[in-house]
Amino acid sequence: DVLAVPSYSVPRWDEQSPRVVVEAMLSGTIVVGSACGAIPEMLGDQGIVVPERDPDGLAQGIRAAMRASTTGRI
Picture 1 (cartoon, rainbow, N blue to C red):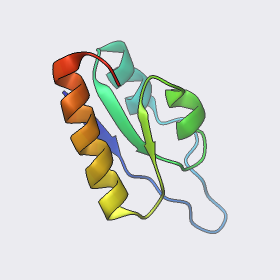
Picture 2 (picture 1 turned 180 degrees about the vertical axis):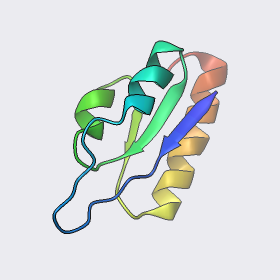
Picture 3 (picture 1 turned 45 degrees about the vertical axis):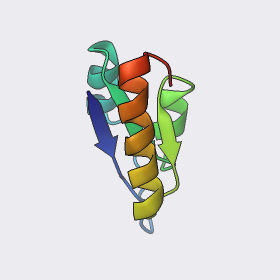
């Protein structure tokens, strides 16, 4: 189904390349990730990118992913 990766930047650190994103994508799981570090580039158009530190945006992204899991389209 869906993997949420709600990482956020802090002074002196951004998310690099979380391996869990690649593993989820390889298994066909839809990834909802925050716009932190390399996550948007990793997801490209194969996942859903939401703003950092935005619980409502994350919830919307998860709902969109759940809908996409039934239709097969993001």
